[in-house]
Length: 358
Image 1 (cartoon, rainbow, N blue to C red):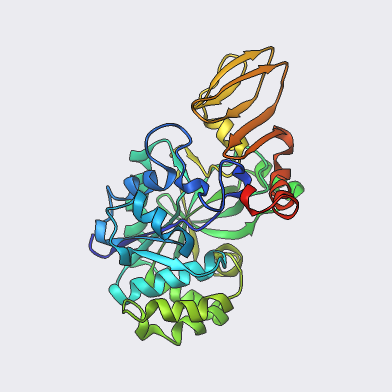
Image 2 (cartoon, helix red, strand yellow; image 1 turned 135 degrees about the horizontal axis):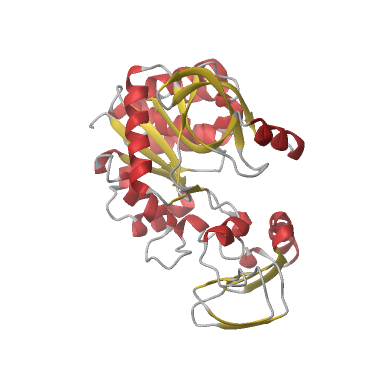
């Protein structure tokens, strides 16, 4: 167990959950379901059942250091890795892997976003244990794959190969975020799984992949390996990180690597990426209205998601298929089917109304 580490990625701003998710308080720090624990805290709680507390790291933007420490007082300060700028998941994970290498060169890593919902926790932890055992003795990059139930264009798709070892298969192809036509073909073929964004590998394996496939990133981190896990680390990261290319681990490594495997799993997973995905998971009334935290009177209204502060009463009359969300100084009313426009709303609010609205 001492060789097993967890990295929780928690630096995003969750713009698709605006106005609840703000740059000053993004969605991973929110408690959408009224459980008393934020998405980040629930992620920590989940992995702390399996990974030693000292081996759990959170990597986040420097802006969210105080928020992270407030929500996870269990962490020592040096377990919070701070990105000076957002550069997507490849530089983020190069940073985490190099820090962990300095702590334990035999380390196995599980990498997980901070904002996923897991309904079947026992099944999830069983699969994580299985995956960690596999990457300890195999030079592979392992991802957890979920059976798709719709032609979703926001996920990566994994084509499962014929070489299998239990629940683990070598992949044929990895396609990140296909267009709708490809997504429909992938779904109909029955050969594809969704990439959950949860990865497992040995630290030596992932760093070798960086050397081979993302040498620009690797060379920057390799130039200062002696700084990691020392008082000079922050200064070094602040120097090299902004110059790293903005690229995801999916595009940069997983689409290109020849040693990618998938562990097929079913544990009630959702990445909570959009208001629509939250509506799918929330408790709903007989007319498919989901009301979060606030109080509501609904008249001839169907298929809505309503998220307002707990002290508010919302009255809806003849509204069908809308997101009604209020937080702080913003009220947004948007058709659910048009929620992809929310990112544009955020851009427009910033440019036309000011930073205080985002």
